[in-house]
Image 1 (cartoon, helix red, strand yellow):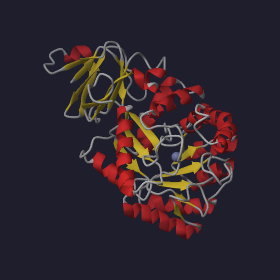
Image 2 (cartoon, helix red, strand yellow):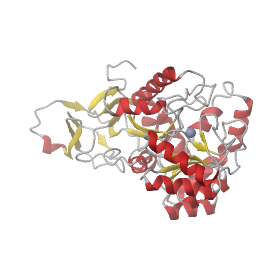
Image 3 (cartoon, protein in one colour):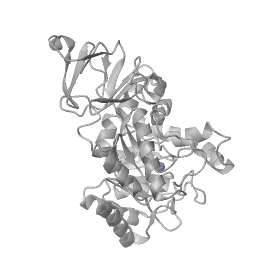
Image 4 (cartoon, protein in one colour):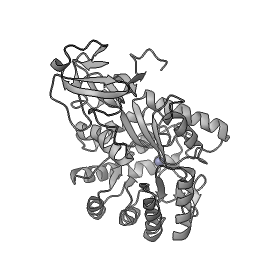
Length: 397
Ligand SMILES: [Zn+2]
């Protein structure tokens, strides 16, 4: 299939006008000025001036959580039902333009089966990476579904268990949480020593580490431990920014988790609403601080949390831009930068040989982020070269 007559965003920037992209056997075969494809005998797709970009990559999803206004733990239904729900959630994400995602904390590893089903091609779905059970201290954030571990030795054991189960990365809970009752948002939970033990053990097996870190002390502990990414990062200071920059740590803001609570005050508990109201503005400022300092920011919508439904992941881009990011840098955060964080070298960019995971949207998202953030502006979602979603796909929505 030859895609032509439109704009191309290659994951980092817009290509000069007049380029076309050729997909063959699920891969990008060539990108070049359209004139070079003159003799092309195969099918053509007319972009009609619209924009072709890499499929979105969401670095922070909870496939086992519903995304409605009720539970945040993902508990409650049996494993069989939960597995099917996780598969449905993955497929909803794909139809929403997300061609790859990372699950940042599941339930009893049921989401591993969903990863294997989607990545092997047995079931339709995005490319999936999983972190397994979150690892937290006694009474820490998400302890009900976590691998609870106290002290460096136990943290090491908990990391080894996730690796044994086949995880792709490790999720460590460094602080309290906004949407988790019974923990104070800003409290540091794991010590720097415990986090360092977990990070070093993960590194021995080439697994990146993601730290849930809201308060300043927790961000510092996690950054000093050398985590790969800070998730949320709500209470940044000059010191956290400097340390994270020095260590090349990614920030995954997950703004939607808070914004969607604020947008649905009647659907959530008064406690959750009050906590979200307390942190929202500080959170936005923190993302802006790291952006202006030149930090690497990857998109993660925390999909599955309260009123944060699977398939609406792209809305995160709207909130990133509202923090001061340019549409171009927000889109890079959802494509090339996210691919770097998730270690997906053949995704997230448009170049020869890449897997043809693509999104076509109406208009120009570099001047109006809503062209991507609002999925009603999507035209087609393409996974491995195959049309899998979008209003023009003639597939069930
Ligand atoms: Zn999360």
